[in-house]
Structures are given as structure tokens and as C-alpha cells.
Length: 177
Image (cartoon, rainbow, N blue to C red; front, top):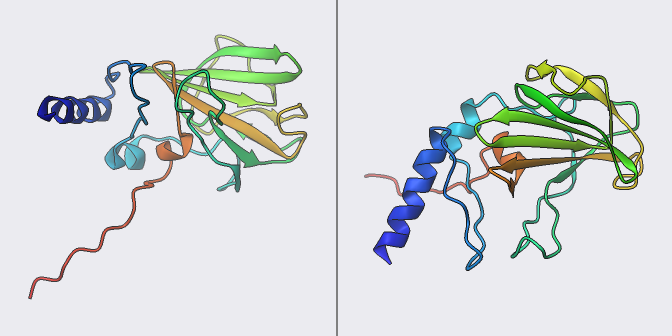
């Protein structure tokens, strides 16, 4: 049991230094935790102007093939500017089934997907965090009311909000008298 906790602690430490964590097993689902120090200093930003409302939060499925919500839906209207949430290279900008999708590879195992978005960048383009990459479009997923923002770390979906905010609960410590 101690080895399991030691291994989990090592994974978090490696993530803090931008090394990929060990691949999860099918035995038990893992929720990737992004250390607070990383969330506060990594340069990630919202893919929309300001801090958009989260209409549908991240909901990691227990198993990869089960239902869940592998990203967040952020309130947006068709035509709203969409920005690169982090520096990276555009790896995909095309239509999947019935909606335009943009994928940015940020390196160190991180990939962002945003949909529906009419891309103003091309595959292979380098973009900086905050660079306008397109406009919110209409598509079946959000029907012109939002964009879906997903982030994968080494192929596993993680909650993108953890890259922006420190979501840990506040803990009150006793006063020393």
C-alpha cells in the first residue's frame, strides 16, 4: 500500500516538472491532478475573452469507453473570437462529422481541442497563448451557444479548468496561540 502512495506522489512531482505521468491502468480510473504551482504559473488562459461561464463541467468517465464529458462547455456566441489557450503548433483544423474542430499541440503531452470553431490558422502554424485562432461557429455539439474545450495529457482527457484555476478546496488551519 505504501508503494502505491509513493508512486502517486512521484507522478504528481513529475507532472510539476512537465514530464508525462505513467499511463493509467484499466484497473482503476485515475483523475489527473495538476499541481497548484503549475496552474498558477504555466501561462494557460481561457480560449475566450475574459472568464467565460462554464455551462457543462468536466466529467471524467470511470472507464474510457463509458459516457462522460471530456472537456468543458464555455458560454460563447457564434462569431466570438477564440484564442490559443497556450503556446503550441496547430495540428488539426478541419471538420469532424458535422462541426469544425481545431487542435493545438502544446508539447509535453498536452493537446487542446476546441469545437465548433472556424479556424483562422492552418495546420503547422505556431501560435502564442492569447493569439486569435478563429471564431466560435455553429455545430451540433453546442448549437451556437458555446464552445467545447478539451485538453488531453498523454492521451488522457483532463479538466482544462485545472490549468487556469487552483481548484483545491480551502483548508482552515488552527490558530497558534
